[in-house]
Amino acid sequence: MGMRSVAVIGIGKTAFGAFPDRDLRSLAVEAGEKCLADAHVSPSEVEAFYLGNFAGPAFVDQNHIAPYVGSALGLTGVPCTRIEAACASSGAAFFQAVSAVGAGLYDLVLVSGVEKMTSRPTAKVAEILAGAGDCSGEVRVGATFPALFAMIARRHMYQYGTTREMLAAVAVKNHANGAKNPFAHMRKVITMEQALAGKPVSDPLTVFDCSLISDGAAAVMVAPLERAREFTGKPVKILGIAQTSDHVALDSKEDITTFRAVRLAAEKAYKMAGVTARDIEFAELHDCFTIAEIIATEDLEFVPKGEGGRYALEGRTCLKGERPVNPSGGLKSKGHPVGATGTGQICDVVAQLRGEAGELQVARHSIGLAQNLGGSGATAVVTILAAA
Image (cartoon, rainbow, N blue to C red; front, side):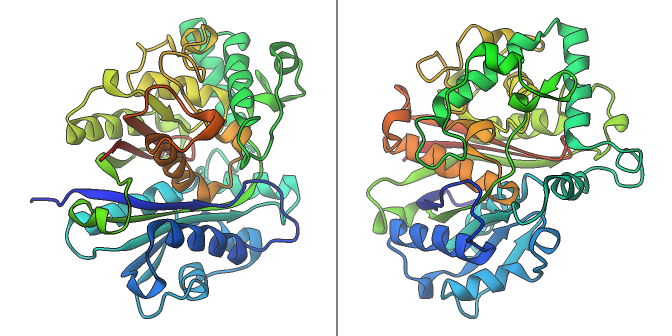
């Protein structure tokens, strides 16, 4: 079946952080309104709305979130659909929006992601997040995500000689970037010594290896590429996109040091884009934990299996390195409002491709990649974008 080429014509996001005085809807509306303005599209022109949200019902007692946000944005009478795929909720929503425009169902589609997490105490947040794991198995025996990713890190260390310094290098680099990002939750430079001496969370992971509990929203407007210039002078083309899935429980995987869903999504996205890993100049990767960024660089074939830790430690993923990874600061420093992370990554990649990333602008910015992960690898979305 022939797909139309699809472009991003607008982006908008809130700052990520802890905002006790903001509710879920106000965050989503702020990002959506910024995106509409950036795309020069009025609410009445939007033909469909997809909203990525992981746990609005648990975090803020609100169900039926898509029309709840859509109507507040002035969208009337159009399909408003919420997508839930754990931490990949808005990556998956973006995949649906691109698929719908590509298939010719609609021309102008708004896709957004939002999460309001700080309304619950940390222990409750950990419990809600654990619901993205296998509740009848690993969660019932007390596995939280830090515990699962600690096992993954420990196994990666055993198989490939990865060290705590390599994990810490990811945190130090992402904090250095995030410190320059006005939208980041934690704008704070950290040293290697601080990262290594961080309070233990789940051995070998310290507090500096874990992403943050954040509030925030991000929105993207997509349209057929052939119409993109009606709306913007800087359209960004979606070269390739794929969403894949895998087992939810870690113990169902044959090798926990790799995410099969990411490898598969990358393979499909590269093929659709007609590029290889070598062509990707910079990337926004899903570093929910430092080990996740290391594994992502391997699964995306930026480096051979087992060499992701060394790649980070050698500084090759730094802002001025050969292939900057998470120039935004990543989930580690920028924040991880779960449902907003996927669209947030797209916004960051698009800003780079447009040359609008300010102090965080990477030198080579003609083709970038976003990789969004759900749970401990059960959902993956990989998107490859280029300046059109």
